[in-house]
Length: 219
Image (cartoon, rainbow, N blue to C red):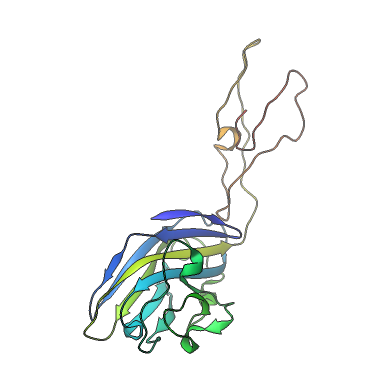
């Protein structure tokens, strides 16, 4: 599993292929942590290799069991969801703001599509067991005869950003000896809300001596 940030979102991804058994289902899991406020938006991108896309039902399940049907039995006689994992542009992406519905599109569904059920049902969820916790992508093959592979998938979550919780810091300096503190420095005992990265800044310069300060908290 991997995690990171993109503009407005934190993301959690799986790039290890998972086999999709014939006439059965499989879950792929990501663990979401650090969302300090309510969810605003959820998106999903994925790449699936399967000779019969219409055999597949794909759903997203939140930590509290809320399930959203992303796509079911779409693709007619076409194969695959997406064309690769390297670029988001190569994947099938599900977004409530998509211009076209997945149900009216053709395999391999490269691009962004509205899911069969709205991902907006996750909006407003917050805290452990509702926003933070285990999220599952479930891929079910409902027709005998073919198998496939979930090549990769990524969950994108936008949460309302609130101010970080900060605490005072105290350091003891020896006269004539530079005080050097490595990052995260003054940020080490602070907490970021909403999953965003924190930076530090100097409000006023020191009265005596000089300060070489980094946004990462070290000085």
